[in-house]
Length: 184
Image (cartoon, rainbow, N blue to C red; front, side):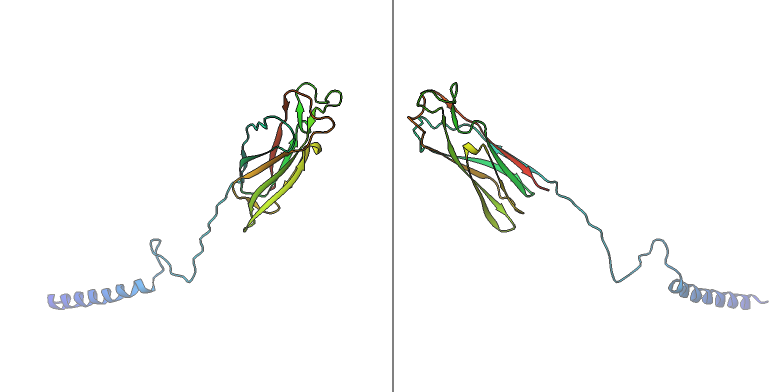
């Protein structure tokens, strides 16, 4: 074979190979590095919010001289992102004489009081939850229903009139406990 013929055949084979090679990628399967195109894309997304229910505040209230009809207000913090119940418990059933809560003679040793508990909630719209209790019942509960707290609450106290001849002279104390119970 002549050198020219061989060069012409080699050039023709080379051109045919290039045409064949350029046709192969279009028909070949995608490689591991290629991205397949589709019509949908699913992405799983998850998260969580931990439940919390906390109450803060407290302290003391001094009514001064007890004659009946005294009032006071105490504010407290409340942070519950779940529905909750608030319970109130009177330790002594009223403001009680330190050493003689049963009184002496015609004088009483306990001054009862009334409590109005008010808590703003979200359900998702704002709403006030209220409950009225008296110290002689020793306990009471209000429920937020399906609402969560909107940031705090208020306790309003009003002492009642003393029974009998009035109150026995001396110091009077009471502890009102407010307990929050989350309902999950």
